[in-house]
Amino acid sequence: MTRATEEPPGGTPDADESLGDRAARAVLEFREGRTDALTDLVREATPLLWHTVRAQGVDRDVADDVVQSTWAALVRHAETIAEPKAVLKWLLVTARRAAWETVRKGRADLRRRTELPDDVTEGSAALPDAGPGPEAEVLNDERDRILWSSLRRLPERCQELLRLVSLADRPDYKAISASIGMPVGSIGATRGRCLAKLRAVLTEQGEASWT
Amino acid sequence: MSRKHENAWGAPVPGEDEPLDERDLAVLDRLGRAVQVVDPVPESLVERSLFAMTLARLEAEIMELQQIEAPAGSVRGDAPPLEARTITFTHERLTVMIALSADDDGAHVRLDGWVAPAATLVVELRQPGGERTTTADDDGRFAFTAVDRGPTSLLVRLPDGGDVTVATPVIEL
Image 1 (cartoon, chains in turn purple, green):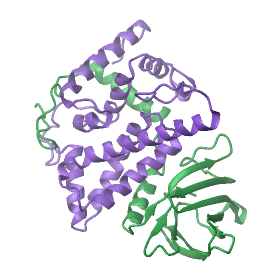
Image 2: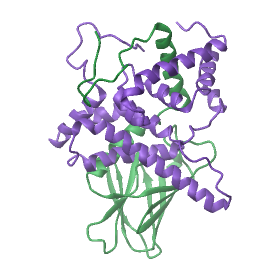
Image 3: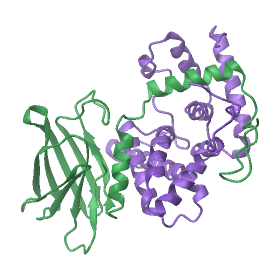
Image 4: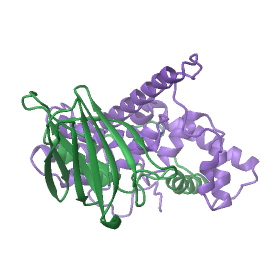
């Protein structure tokens, strides 16, 4: 997996097209009855939607449901979305809201069922399985496990941001800003700070060489 | 060489083009692979989403997935799923519960369902390969046997609902 920070040599005409641009084009073409670009968009953007939804603290079954419902909602709204350039943002915000809704409902149901006082932390949802936890057991490589447990020691905002940034070779930062609700203006600097924190933790763990 | 996204949503992202050094890139690269191992996108989610989009064009109201009861250890959407799974879907006017079991020695799936409130409703089973129809009995019971595995959705036309059709989210049989 390459992670180019520079323009590929003699870049293709599409090289400058961001995920947000492709989403806009997909919806415009869909309105004209051509669905190929939208199909490609589903393939490309589903991982971003998935991890956006999972970061709200919903389990895998619910996240699965939220993601496909979000895509279905896009089809139902395709004709009425006034600003195609904002399609990707719309998708991410819709998915996040749907995820919040299920989390809130789940908590309300749980409270009703158990009749316990409200001791659930409100506000920003916890990432699934907080702590280094058993989830890291699926990582076979010791260095991966160290990386994962180091990540889990960062503030939640950093964890969310770095997970999403790590997904694509050329992340669409505007999309990521929409998916975690962080102002576009601060995302670049936050990325730098979070990476620095992660590297500091890794160095503490004795993992100095990563190249 | 600096790549600015002035295209999608207006102004460029401050700091986006700040260079990442080799170690940053290596960390992100390794992290990206770890994320995909620890929390993989379910294998068939893209296919089910595409199918859900096809169904959405039918303008049915999508029911809400209420509850899945599955044997411990199984994960929906991954691997060969599902025997003995019970799923409940709700809509403000209708609840559909389905129980799944192996049929034809596991080559196919048997789907037993109940609609509540009970009514003799027409139930349609949609898969990318085609559709089948049955009618629920007076107790609201219906069944489909020898169903192919793959993305599946049930559509029910509401009684006295004019043209209102409700559909379950797409599930992977």
